[in-house]
Length: 249
Length: 167
Image 1 (cartoon, rainbow over the protein chains, first blue to last red):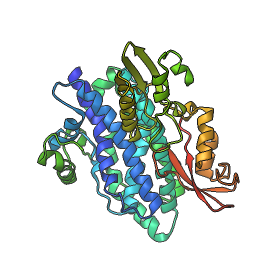
Image 2: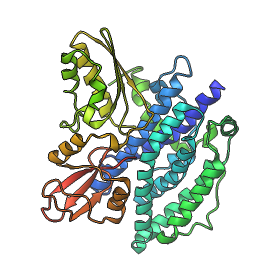
Image 3: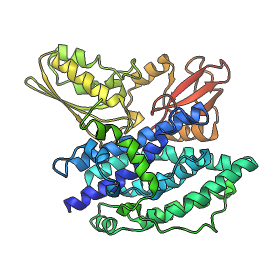
Image 4: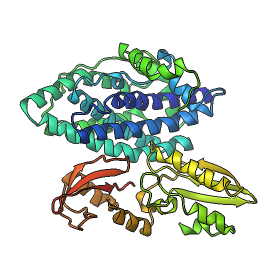
């Protein structure tokens, strides 16, 4: 039970951590000052949430710390989904990846607010307020880009074509998630999916985005099977800790 | 928020604690900000519960450190605990704190529904702290720190920060 909870916390934290890292790559490279600041602010929120999850996880396993969990795992021991690993190909990809994640993350947190585990519930109560702002930001941009110029529309549609296939695994329940749901600790992914679908049908028509033809892919990042991208992310993310073990700022 | 200090008999300690401010908004004491949840003094030991404003807010580490240094400088030992529940809301900023924010040039948080209107519809309701005009415009939902949005006044043309409503 303790082991399962530990792994579940990593699963929750890893999505925020890897997406947070992707967004942090944009620091100083955003298309304009306001967007640059917005995306790095979202990154900061996500990292804050990760710290809460990992701090808690560290209390469940001897010898682990918040930092060792973040920096000293191998690729296969990260449980984030493939969606959040996808690169910052262009601004449309950044926004669409964020939008798909936010549309999943907000109802996930709403579920976790009722978790029997008091710490998870507290983290969710805290994070939901931030996640609402994120979803507001990303859905406004999806509409603006999708319903903008011919080029912005095409780029946004392309981003959906590339990224939408990866949403499938967000809602496929792993044995770990099933066990946590049955314990009253984890979220019910069917309910998360219903809310996700509603966000899609609310936002996509006004963005002129068509997703009905997009085929979903069976990926399984949640069990540690990742795309090539994660290796490159970890190479950068872990460099300092690997080169100078136990360093601190 | 001053109620938190009532049980402290050492006036020096009280005075030191009241000096601790938010590093990003130095006019606000941590009591104005509402992040101090509990203070417990037993003999020469001080136990304080603080709660973060935003999850990733780097100011929290600085505030914890400032509290510790201030308390220990008076010969006490200090224990600062970070508590997550109940989650902080902008309602916990004291009335005096809101006034100080305005004077400092940051528009104070509105209610949740007005905040939504301000950040989505862009209807002018956020008052410019510089000239008090409500003819203002949202520039970006995310500002210089996690807790702020960036606005611009259409009358005096000054940009200003708005402290987002968090509930």
